[in-house]
Image (cartoon, rainbow, N blue to C red; front, side, top):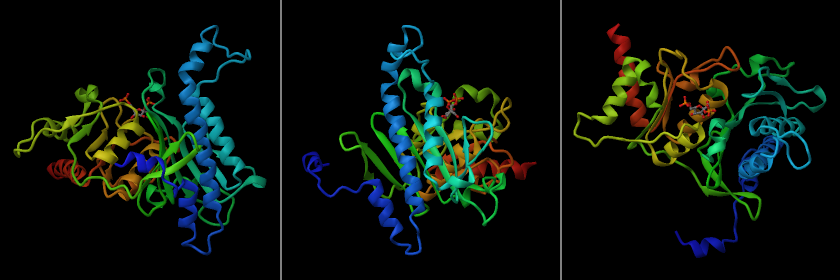
Length: 341
Ligand code: FDP
């Protein structure tokens, strides 16, 4: 890469410009989606700043869990949730919000209501906050079915009905990855401009990867196909090299690496958690949507992940997602088990 030329680049494709360009392809569009997205972007910028300051804020808070103004410090995930809920409601473009942090869905008051439903995890991987590991926000966007009073059915739709999905990773840089159903694009926050700039256009996941990513501490409780698959990754019998293991334990970071480098990310079912750990609406669906849009696959152990129809807003599902060929292998192992029964 020509870093010097890069530093003087003058034609910057910001996320706003990118989305407006996309919008201009649809003359009938009223710009509602662009407005909604600008509110999501604002939430991401706020959380990015808060995450960057978290270590410092904690040090200040050590004097007695209160900040300099004498107010009690809010936990970062609670704070992030408040920021996103307020930004989304004030956009005037949403009608139902489902957040990982809130037990019940939020129905937006009629005076501020729009046509979009947003499902999100404001700060995923939050058990990693205190040690400075990358964490992120994940979101998916649906549109209400018809002109009717919004109900929970509007969000209990299969992931394939999402209009858009994305995540923002708060890591060594702040990266927002977005798909509106026409490929996947990545934007990096330029802190001096306060703008997300297109840095990863048209992301395609390698067809096959060299990395597997799973919490192997759960291996004792895995089912046959998952155990066989991981064994194959470590001791391939076809003469290929073993895969490397990388597991951060923060979904956004593990999925981001998988998207860029290829390979497979697994959070399978096990004897203790028959539905796995990850949540369908705001973890499994958005990440599966992005994987498919990048040319990969996402599978639950039984079906294409995006075909699942959730019955509860915080439902969980096992998930295997990543490079097309790697997911094919795990599908074959589950398929063979079904045939053998
Ligand atoms: P966390 O518990 O830190 O919030 O679903 C949340 C999640 O992190 C994911 O981000 C991550 O992939 C997964 O849980 C990690 O779970 P394990 O600790 O069981 O591996």
